Length: 127
Image 1 (tube, rainbow, N blue to C red):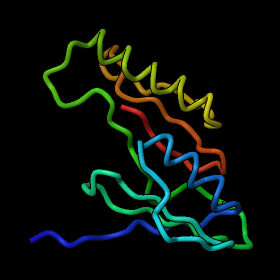
Image 2 (image 1 turned 45 degrees about the vertical axis):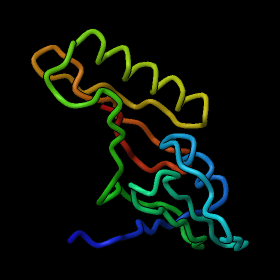
Image 3 (image 1 turned 90 degrees about the vertical axis):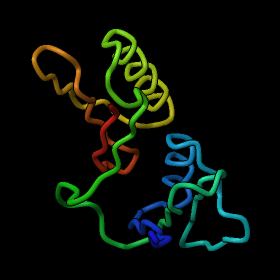
């Protein structure tokens, strides 16, 4: 049986970054979690892990060792034009929510994923 788990993240502004990731992932604030130096979001369907954000004094100094990939295009086989449309739509939504687009990664001429930065500069991908 799989274990229930939570992803813990450091943050400069836990409430701001939790709000961004709730928007990005379709999550919601965790009921009853009300801490000035922390925030937690949950999958409203109870499938995905909770994600907690705790305030830390130091800023981000290097590339993430782990990051979230947002998979909007589903599983193969893909209609490649529709897959790219879904990725571009999500990227545009995330830019409006405060993320920054960094670069496209292409494989054999096809869009593999888009590398982005969340509002605190953490790398993630949209595929």
